[in-house]
Length: 110
Length: 114
Image (cartoon, rainbow over all chains, first blue to last red; front, side, top):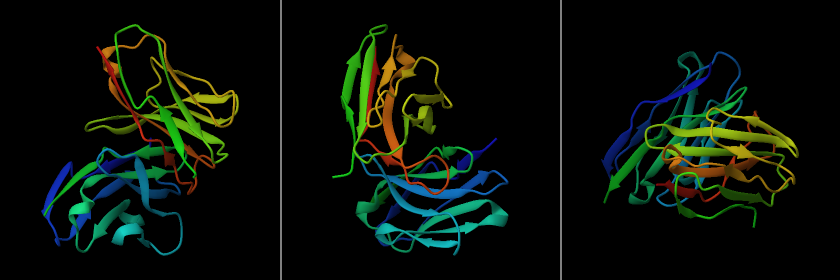
């Protein structure tokens, strides 16, 4: 069975700090990987996705993620966060079905 | 503007009173699905539809029904709502299932069942 695990439930950091959110999945076959973001009161929107090629993927708003196949991981990073990055972040894996992680709430203090 | 719309956005109802949450997309997407979002559990798929008249159960289908009579619409029906169905519901659509297709989400419907 496929599952997605996000390491942190809630992350609190200050503006300009670096952010890294962990995501691991359990599926041995070909996968497509996504990070979605949900800003307060809004719907989910796509940050970035990986389906093939360069394992380092760049998305919107300065986010990037690295696919490490040997570790079954797809961690999200941002070198310097802003207050506006306060949101909930979801990792998702699509193989034979689309599965979401439980989400990580990120609070950025001004 | 390409979008997924849901109505209503907020709903408070009582146990047992049938309700329908509508979902519509204007992107000619074949694949549509419903999710519920609960704290600590992320998004869990309720039902999905590969195309008109083709629907199937997701991970948490109990207590829900769906229909897909037209490509653009995918309503979620709760025949007899119960308090454990209090949740935030999202409709989503995409070009297809699987692969690298991006899901487009609606704004969400916050349902409270008392």
